[in-house]
Length: 413
Image (cartoon, rainbow, N blue to C red; front, top):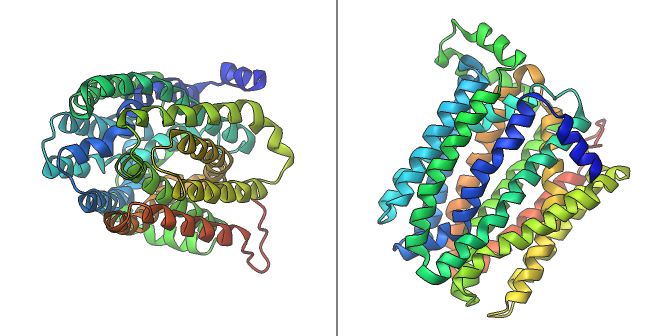
């Protein structure tokens, strides 16, 4: 644990600015996130409409993801992150705060989908400086996860207010808080970051090239990816992982409150338990796992994920304790799997084409997840257990991909 804090103390540049400002986004997000689906439900949005919002949002995100690398290269990592974040998070937060029905949520989803542009620029902003040191990169990913999880401990504040005043009025206020806090985060990150050398180089190289011509360059990026077994595997694993996270974050609250009859205010406490377990794991266990191969640890994480979803499916009604056990098991799975998947993807991407390859990765992942968004909403409309059955099937697919070997290739990850 002391080693991790020493690492953070000596961390410099954009990575430190990213880690330290992240709570200003994470705190408001984790205040409203446990209640977001319930908020829509109470405003008359049906299960299949929630799935429709997921699917349409992902389709639009796919479109903007393709532009992410081009815009990031042309206008720079730093400026793209500032403007893109303000558009994709600050404006939707205001729309969500005053939403009345499905159409308001649709409008917000359309604008929020532009965050895929900054998903590329934000990542490049701190990875560019650290990409050559895989160990340092893994530690930064861990700190970003830790920074995000620490913010979850503010969730009980929302739970207490929801218990007293109900979901809709409380969440409206939380979205207004999110608007202020997130906007402050975007401005501070811009002030305390600098454009990366790779970003400056790409800005010079693309200065006199149109966006449309830069988009045509994706054919070369596509060729580079499909010729690389490691990149294709990283893409498939990340894509399936994103789908399972999307399904769980969207449909868990509905299943727990509407089918298992757990009181709605408890939705604020499961994220705290999850964060506590993840933080304990990241601080006390993660540093001891370096003796094991990352691929083996990811396999254990996938098996743990399957076990967690199995526990959720057999959960008895009104059993908060059972859902707490599910949450603990799922948190261990996240801590084992997700940082290693992120590190795997970062390590296999060509630094010279990081922005465009990352954009293509994101667009491909979103193309797949948009289909699963529609499917999960349809399944939930039939039976709210079915999205989690789908999760188990997807984790089995991940396991098969992870253990698959290509003749003549090194499968170590």
